[in-house]
Image (tube, rainbow, N blue to C red; front, top):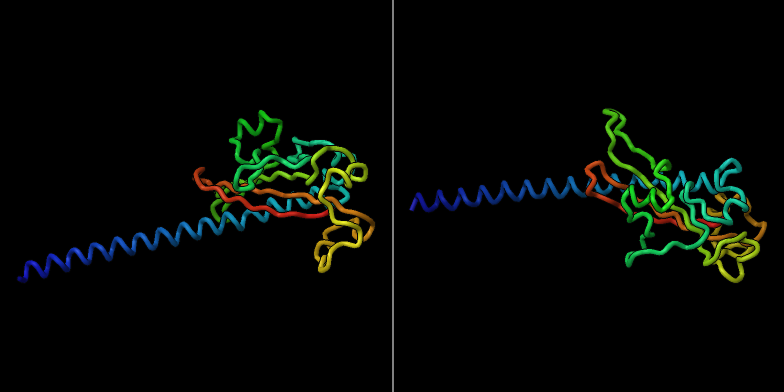
Length: 195
């Protein structure tokens, strides 16, 4: 009887240790995923800087009229997979470069204490238009846009928008892929802005 009781206690102890190991692993995975989502902010900030400042590489209407793949910008809406992720972000580095997009715009995230790479952030910006051209020419026939006067509660957008109150504004989708250093974990984040 004593041996059977000890065997039951041993099996219960092993199950408890395995359960604790699994819980620790799950908590670690959730934390890692959360860190990747937090790193996506760097991609959003880089894309907004490219679009919003007078010195941004995508500030000019002439630049925004055509695809600028070297700047990770498409003048037309990109095709997406069933989950809404633009096709370029699903490509590996070789296919991404072969299609004309630039890996030079990738942001490398490093641990501040060890200087070891923890993630790579890649973004693409696509204007929500079905054809290329200057926004003022194609907006009524081909684009999703915010009409002049904005939307109710649009004050935070106006803080971003250099042209607030001066007319209609095009909608741009910013899509971010954050790839973990392990190479197997990816997080996707999207944001839209008007300019």
